[in-house]
Length: 196
Image (tube, rainbow, N blue to C red):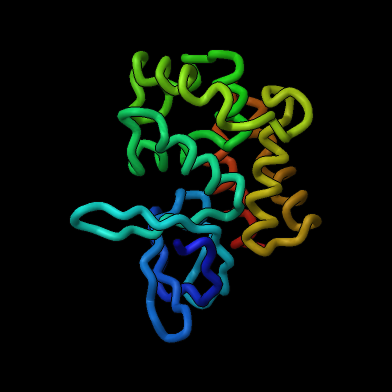
């Protein structure tokens, strides 16, 4: 099992990185928030899992171990494969997923591409005791997105001061939204840091 990778990014797009590890380029499928924060030449530390299929070996990489663990837990649900698990983590943070499962919030789960009402019910039923407790403090609808974006930026190598400045810059976007889209806010925060 490949549990982690550290290397230099040689190629990056919205869902995949190629990471040079000791002269070998490893293709790593990543959530958009992880892939969009990396550029060729960046050194990355990824928490990974290897998915073995009859016709492929695919490495999935994440900015932190919590995302990787949630990805692995979600795949234990019947009918959920890596593609759906990746869509879940591209749409929801692990804490948002835990909250949705704990509160049986089907409306949040069906926002994920590929998850219908029956799939959301199955996620709630089968993940109830597998995801652990919510780790972020406070109400997610009252600024919880800030901690998710800060954590994402810091895992990509930005300092807390830089992350806080980027969060301040994108806060007006979140204020206008009912439920803030963390992935979109992270992308917007990264764009403000690129201009700095």
